[in-house]
Length: 240
Image 1: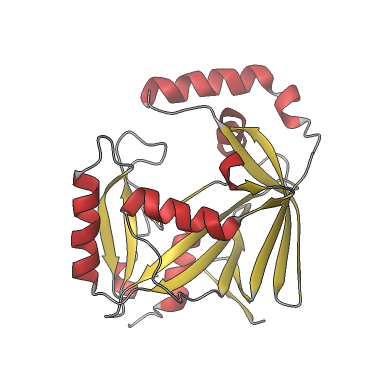
Image 2: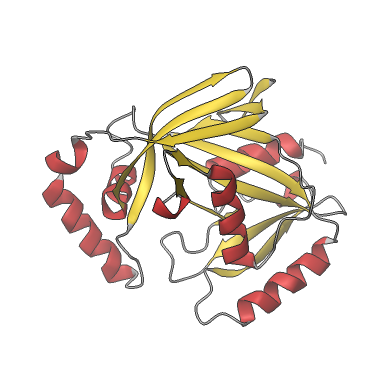
């Protein structure tokens, strides 16, 4: 297991990730019920397509022997959005999520541009989403499946057979970003064309398009979240 830092994030290479679903008595939703409701109404006024479903947040995490173990519990998406808005008032509760990082055969990384109707309109990041009840398998939470599902739902891509299984954990900004870099056997141009065809076939695609990163000069400090910039800065050192 190796560890280093980039853009204020701690980066750890992992052999595996294991998550379980737990009950957790989180006082935050009760103590902030009125503020959560008001904030949510303001959000859906701007983005009427948003849905207050159930998401999973992290209340405990350890890394031992190259394996990260997490405890995840359920809360409402409206609660989560307000929690992020006030800069994580409870530092013990972390936004933990998994994402595939699509690498192309010609050495590029692909990011999606979030559509205008989404909560993060215009931002550029890897196809991903906060885990939800669809990822629960008995007592466990399938983060590997969550990452693959989000990739397919957003881009139409399916992981190539024999895809890499190693993970990279980025810790910072009250987030645990579990990234799974996977190299596809196609060029960036070919994959972007495939994804564009998939998006054209959807009534309301989550993505507005794709963004290709080939070096440090392609890192967008405004539209890329911190964990994306940190990963790319580590993968493409300055001058690349």
